[in-house]
Length: 379
Image (cartoon, rainbow, N blue to C red; front, side, top):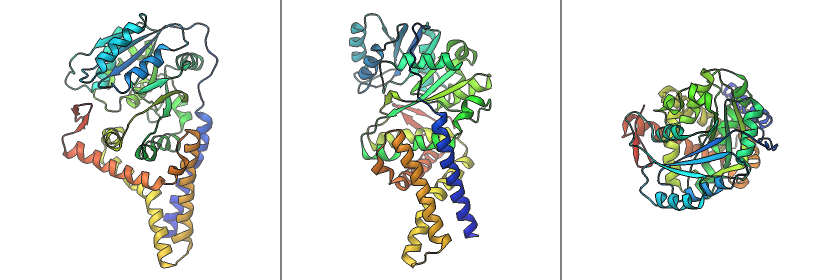
């Protein structure tokens, strides 16, 4: 029985490795053929207490080489220096930038969805780009994303930006986002399958055709979703739209978190919500993470301590560890992560297990999710 279990775990990891290799083909960078002329793009940035990030973000947007675009930033009740920074940027923008003041958050809405919904009311563009305040955009980011959505026939485009990683904990845990994306989701089916189960979107950068955004009722369709990006993708698919996904590491970068506290709170906010607040789903996820990435080390240590080098107790767990590390190392190379910290993959998975339990406990038995000074509990 143990032998069969170990074989199943190894075959599962080999399947994920194969999917990763296939996804590397199906997740290209955006085209570099810049359009000579294109439709007006409304760039929209929700900002709440983003004094550390907002100036870098807006300045990068003001440097775009695409000719026809406008920038709207919504100050969502910031209590730091965000409003003052935005006022200064407006005077320097030569009319390109407009700053809006957010309205009070209605009951039943998540803050980001409400901010984006307000922004969309003021947008004039045929294409609508929603991007986070902690992003930084290369000068050709807008032109290449327009070329990508127009050339692909997509109704919604999203990318995976380069994730800037400063602290040890960021380098350890944040790359798991790429592991989940590249090893578990067949990216070819994001575009070709109408099934909402095959959905990908990253709220750091989402580009819509306006007509389709309005067809799904915009962010009002996901007003109570913590992970609104994926649910927007599901809504587009349910409405018959085409979703396209690209590797955007060469055009957009993002610093999601700056320390362990922010990382812990951010991942805890999203993890339980990402699986639809399903308790069985969460504990199945915990069991799978443990079986695939943690338990093999327990078998290996036991084997070494006992001096028993049998196939089920040593060689199969050893093979499982090698395959899991190979996946992490390939992802580290492609997405420019630390190769040395990739060898601590098991530690990152242990931290993820702790985050999963914390996410469950806070939402089910605590005061809900606290983010940007607001508390949410939509479970």
